[in-house]
Figure 1 (cartoon, rainbow, N blue to C red):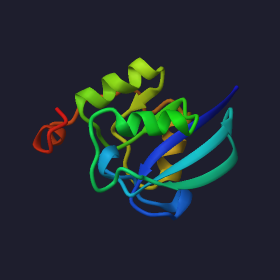
Figure 2: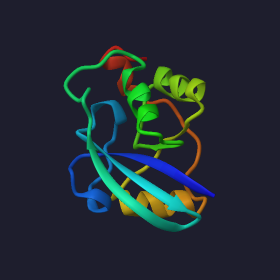
Figure 3: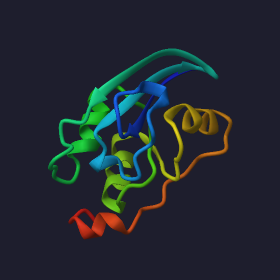
Amino acid sequence: MSKRIAISVLSDAGLEASVSSHFGRCSYFTVVDVEGHTILHVDTVANPFYARHQPGQVPGFIQSLGAQVMLSGGMGGRAVEHFRQLGIEAVTGAAGTARETLKRYLGGELDGAEACTESVEHGHG
């Protein structure tokens, strides 16, 4: 089964980019199409809401990219709920590079989303 997976990252280095600790404040998303454990295509997309965003805008953007999964270091509770409502699997706890995060996710070592407290500090709790 093929999947499109978005990963919040700090640069446009594709799978070698470091994962961002908070998806809404990341500079880029690495978008990966996979079939099982095989990588079919990798793209990097700038986050148009990097400087400023309202709750729900970034999850809506991820949906517009066709992603079924969003991997990130962390995200706020409202974002987790927005993704759930959009039918997108949100996963937090990612770290290292996008490649390492993807490998952990595909291997079943990374799943579930726990809201981070930092989102409250910038009004997204």
